[in-house]
Length: 382
Ligand SMILES: Cc1ncc(COP(=O)(O)O)c(C=O)c1O
Image 1 (cartoon, rainbow, N blue to C red):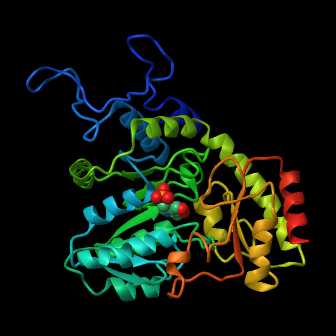
Image 2 (image 1 turned 120 degrees about the vertical axis):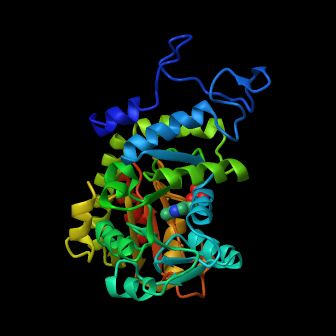
Image 3 (image 1 turned 120 degrees about the horizontal axis):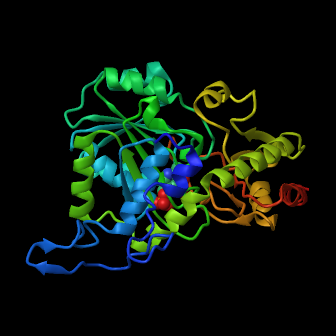
């Protein structure tokens, strides 16, 4: 843990293969492990749903990056969220969720876990009075505050230390979805959060070639419960996806530095463009969460969203007109992506209180040459 971020990214959990000396630990594409007699295992591994060495290597690496103790690698960001929610809460429990959050998380809570007896209150967790108003009513199944910072798609910023202190005063836990920041920019556990979740599909994998999720915690009892349900219900990634994740995480710092630099240039360009009515980017001094972001993040991330002057039709036209920015859902890969949240990633919350402006476009700014990104946007907007 004394090593710097990139040394941990490259070395944590990455012991060279003891048999061959291979610098890159092998990919254990196996579902099961031979036994020398009934119950006489050759290692801690027995069956790949319960444990697999490639998954363990990825988990060890990610725990080191998040400055956490225990990590679990799952088959998607949503399965990580579901595993957390079913572990941290019981029927009769309550989740406080911000209005601006990934639409799939809102859908999971309001259209799946509602019938499991979980109440979801949409309230701003970063607004102390609003949070306290919810938390002061006890819930027999426990309370969990779900924080996205920066949030998806509006890049709202939430003070993780302040939310955690308030939640803990009411015996509630705090889970931070750290997908947008990545552990290179922000570590919620040392700030006081109880649980970190990731869609590893995004910056951690970094190359748009895997779907995966992860959970990191410090609490041993919670870790045991997560491990139990992960095995009992099979919330696991394939060894191959875990291996791709390992490879991606090794270069996280250099990729993030470039994502952040490119995003800053793109946001500045958009802010001055006459066909853009508003830019959402926490790196601007004028952003309401700028001071908190500057305190709790290393940099301001690779995501930028903006409202297009001219409304929905014009924003749809711009989204379809870029050529370097590919029109696609997801984010965090090396290639730049553009999407229309109201019609794409957040379509599942259309018509609800969490609905997104229909002139909003979200950019995942990649690591290409920034001049090409600017020319592409300029051409599409013009
Ligand atoms: C912030 C955030 N959390 C969770 C998810 C869900 O992750 P996955 O698609 O890997 O299930 C996403 C997906 O876009 C996301 O943006």
